[in-house]
Structure formats: C-alpha cells, structure tokens
Amino acid sequence: MHSSPRRCQKALPNKVSRLFTTVRAVAIGRLTPSLESALVRRRMRGTNTLLNGSDENTPKSHRSMQTSTAATPKDAAAVILLKHNTRPDDPEVFLVKRSHKLAFLGGFHAFPGGQFDAVDAEVEVKNCDDADTCVAISCAARELFEETQILVARGGEALTQGQRLSLLDDLQTGRMSWPALLKHYELHLDANDFVFVGRWVTPPFSARRFDTWFFLVKCPAKQRAFISGDAELESGDWVSAKAAYDRWQRSEILAVPPVLHGLKTLAAGFRNDAEIDQELVARFLAGPNAHREPVRRIEFRPNYICFPVRTPTKPPATHTNCYLIYTSRELLVIDPGSPYEDEQEALAAAVAQLLAEGRKLSGILLTHVHPDHVGGVNALRASIGNANVLAHRLTAEALPDMAEARPSGRVAIESPQAKPSLTLGLLPHTVCLADEDTIELDGEPRIALRVMHTPGHARGHLCLYEARTGTLISGDNIVGLGSVLIDPPEGNMRDYLNSLARMRALPNLSVIFGGHGPAIANPYAKLDEYVAHRLDREQKILQAVRDGAATPKGIVTVVYTDVSPKAHAMAERAVLAHLEKLVEDGLVRETSDSLFLPNN
Image (cartoon, rainbow, N blue to C red; front, side, top):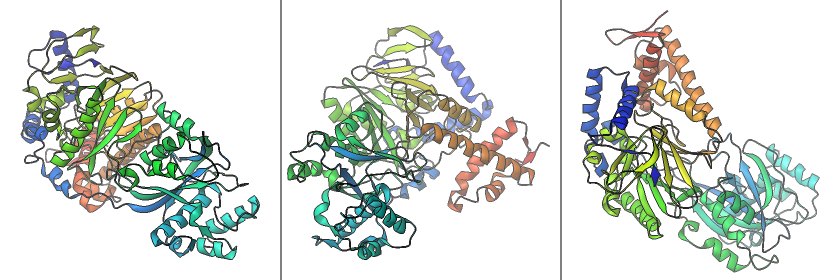
C-alpha cells in the first residue's frame, strides 16, 4: 500500500508534528480549554473498550439502540425479460433504470418488477398448483405490463399495440382491476410462460427489504417494450446481458446482487432459443442467495465490497457498513464496527477468503470514532494478525488501545506535506492520516483513495474519494438510511455544512458508499438535499427563537413536528448544534442560564 500516513506516537518528526498541531487546532479551536479537557476525559472513558467490542462503557444512547430489529421483507416479483428470438450466445434482456428521485435504490439498474398487490391473489394461473407461486406470477405479469407495456397472457396474441395501451390505461386509471381486466378480455396467465429462477431477500442492512421472486420470461412476438418515464423508472432498453455486465465491471452502472447475478448468468449464453433449458435455470439457481439466504458480500461496484455488520447503532439502521476494498494484490478494510462475536467471525471469514486469493492486508481504516464503526477492530486484528489501523489523529487519540499496540508492517508515505515518497521502517500499528493524503493499493485495478478530513459528525471524521470511478466513501457524513446526527461537542454544524460543500465540489462523483444503508447513485442530488434540509431546519430554528422558544426542548416541539417524540432527545442535540452556529453567526445569543435569545 502506497499511502500518506504518519505514525501515531508521542515523538513525531517536526514537520508532521507541526502539521497535526495545526489540524488539531483547526478541528477543536472552537472549544475552550476546560471544555476540551472535559470532552477528552469523557471520550476516553467511553472508548477504552470499544475496539474490543465490549459495550460496557458505551453511552446509554447507543446501548438503547440494540433493540432495533431488521425490517420484515415484503413480497415482490421481478421479470428477467428475454428479447424475442434473441441470440443464445449473446442474449438480450430488458434492463430498466430506476429514477434518481427514488429514495430506495434511485439510479440503479434493475429488472422490471414490484411489490405484491392484494388483487394478485385473485388471478387464476394455469398449470400452477402452488398458491404462493400463482400470486408471484400474477404480480410479475402485472408489474411487467404496468412498467413496460409487455403483456404476457394467453389470448393476448391478437391484440394490437393500441389495444394493449387501452387495457393498460384501464388498469392504471383504476377503471378495471387486474383480475377483472384479464377476465373481461378473456386472457389468462400460464405458469409455463414464467420460469422460476430464484428468490432473493434484501439483506437486513436496508430499511426497505423485499423477498423477490425472479422469473425468466420470453417477450411475446410483435410486442414492443416501452418506458413512459413515470415516477419510478426513467429509462429502459434492450441490452446484451454481456454488454450490461461489462458496463458494471467498468463502473459505469450500479446494480444489486440479484440483477448482477442474472446478467452474469445470461452473459454465459444458453443452448437454444426454442425453450429455456434446464442447464440455464440450474445456473440461475446455483448458490444459497437464490434460495432466500441474504447476501453478505454486496459488491455494488467492482472491487468495493459492502459487508454490513450488525451493530448497536441508531434506528432505523440496524447495521454498519464495513467496506472491503481490494485489488489483485491488496485489501483495505474500512469500519469493522460490530461488537458481536457472530458478526466478527463472519467478517473475519470474508477477509480471510480475500487474503487466501493472494492478497495482503494493507490495513484497517476507521472513518471516525463512534462505537458502531470501531467495535470490531481488535477482534479482526486478533483473527488475521496485527494489522495497521489507519485513522485521523483525533480518532486515534480517543482510542488508546490503538496507540499502545506493537509495531507491524511497512507503510510508504506520499503526502502533500512530505514529498517525494519515503518509507518508514516498522511502525506502530496505528497510522495517522491527514487531509489530502493518498492511499494507493498495489495491483489491478489501480485504486488511489484521496483522504479528506471532513469534520462535522465527528471531529476526526474521514472520507475517501477515488477519482477514477467517482466513488466516495462517506462514513456517517452521508448515509443511505436514516439521517445524520450532529451532536455537540463532538459534532459541529458549521464544520458539517463545510464538509458537505467540499464533497459537493468533487468532480465526476458517481456513487456514495455511506456508513449505513444501500449505496447512493444520485450523489449530487443527495448532497443538495442534505444541505437544503439543514439550512431549512436552521431557518425554522431561528424563527422559533425569534418567536420566543429559548431552549432546545422548546424549539423541538415547534420545529420537529415531523419527528416521533421518541426521537426528540436526539433532535434536541441537533438543535443545539444549529444554535451554536447561529450564535457564531451573531444571530442568536446565549444567556448565562443557557437560554437562547434573538440578537435583533
């Protein structure tokens, strides 16, 4: 690993020491010496055991979250639609792109499909004896028709395109239900037209989960697939499965594991187009994930594995995303946060498998200090051997277990403050990273991660940006699930807004991998949404103060009307962060008895 870190130890080279003195001053300059000292003492008491996975000293706000449970998957169905008379050696499939406006997997490529509807169970499906399968087929046929205008129903061969559009209008306007439409036009579904090729369950790290039946279907002759550009889908095209999978390998599209599995399976071709052969079906059904076992290794983008681990995090999240970034020669682990032994063992097994393929472990990187991101560090190190831990100095100082470890490994330095590259000898296993450092992994493909110090959620928070593919690992600054808590004094709203602006300025940003939830394929829109939300809250808080609300609790009752009372305690912390910024802006003043009053 070619990188730009420095050792975290008391005796640092003068240049590096001056650098981190400056960084620390910038990061905590807003604190008084007494407050800074109290904060350090509090953080040290609460983090001595975090790396070992013990939650004995975890703050109550974190411990109370352990009762969060994963969402129950909803039944759904999807259609892998093969083009009529497609070439068996290079089959074409209809691939849609989900709207960037969607909160769940917006911007991802997918197969047509959706959730079960109550009326799906009222449809008779010929040649099908299993009630659940009948409902799934009915859902698949209805969703395919609604999304692509393709009607896979016996008796519909004589319908013209215009007639099918008329039927679709009847269905979408509610003039006729799905069962009534089929009956009225003497159409029926036949299970022989829908070949079952798997049932995939969304992993529990997502607040929206689905138990999705996948069916391989041949497009009827003379029917033309068309996407109207509705609220859910923005485009759809016939594409070679091989070409689509190649686009994913070039980091040009994003897709979830079952879609990638489908594209990869079809890319290998099949024997003939006369019928869907059993060898092809067997390849679709190979592996436990096609039989409802949730995927653990989620590779939204090549060489970036998201490995969610169960943690005592804040709801609605139940998991923290650990990332395994790899090349042909090296592996970097980010945020192994679980304190739970079963999760630690699962992660260690995934890491061991990648190492067994000939890679070496470059290190374990921590985006920030919070317990749900550091809880499994020592367990992973114990499993795979002492490994370098990379973190910002402010994070390392709060985790003394790291600073006292034995030396391990060699790290090449490449830094704006220290060029050309040089190699330090044996280092303590904690390596300090600073803003604008670079971590480069040896091997193919070339992965060079730009280190960005992005305080706000936490003082030592780091993000990583990879310019070649436009990939941003955002830690908890941006998440795919829930909202980001800015909790003073560790959190600072001005720093957070500045960090968001800095990430928004990154060029060619194509995806954000957050600390919780699925990947974000609409990064600029998401960043704009985050900034707009914070500024809107700030204006409402300022107005509440001007209207007489003088405490965080009083402001919450006025401003956070869209938040459950159970979350009001956390909302008060966020309000305090906004108030601190408003005080700095000169718009609000704080009295000696901790009341906040307008300055005009």
